Length: 52
Image (cartoon, rainbow, N blue to C red):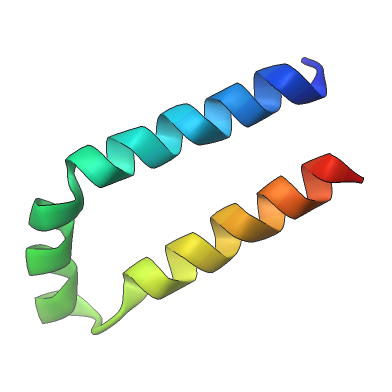
């Protein structure tokens, strides 16, 4: 896989997360508070690493 493929995978995953965001937000806020924050940090970190 080259960088473009990996970035496509990340973008697809982000799209899935956005589609499921309302459900995930409802469930996760009850469960853990703010796991979405961790998800976004992880995603941004992956994207930054792919740019190097």
